[in-house]
Length: 323
Image 1: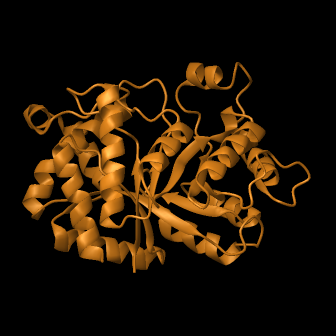
Image 2 (image 1 turned 135 degrees about the vertical axis):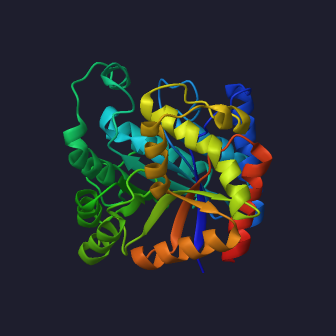
């Protein structure tokens, strides 16, 4: 049976405030838990007008407090900008509050332009290349047998995953014996190779056995045509994000009325490789085919459309067709 979770960038719909988007996020987490989703992860984005998730650790606590058994996670904490020890203490604090429900995903993104990266890192030089060492340190601080263990010293340590987009990230996760999450929603071309390398090269370390999943954009409509109508707002949103423009999600009407040039239309078509868009049958067939290709039955779903009720129904349909 396929495992399903949500990866939420908290993309703010136009017409809503950050506060209203945060409230909708809590409601969505409670709703998907009622459907049977196993986990709810939060991204980390900075200095954007429309990405409300800038502190995944805080959102993890908020959602865990408002749900019963839903696992909460980060996808991911931007480790190069922070102290590995401080990140470990935050994760242990969450584990103490919500035992067995904390899943930490960490990645090597700068979090924004150089100004933002520097502000996050308190003016320190760029440490993106030090990510492997910082991840090793984090493993040490979270491990029961580590030379220095962060506090509070909970009975069990949280799950730990390294995020990646290709073979090198898969090798690093395998070498350290941590979990691995492949970002198909960013780079759809290296998933098969990355999953194969992680599985083949995994060495027992922080985890005793491999744990891997993938993240992907999915919109499931009543029909293929309905899904295409819904997807217009996500298409426009993603194009704006990549151009560094307004990252709030436009309405379907606004997106439909936009006069795209040929270059933009080509970019939208290319971005569809990062997504599954369709009615129930199409979504089921394509996700099962991708699962077979990746040999991966564990997925984090992103759905960044404007209409909140339609978003909820998309998640509902996905669960219905796969369980």
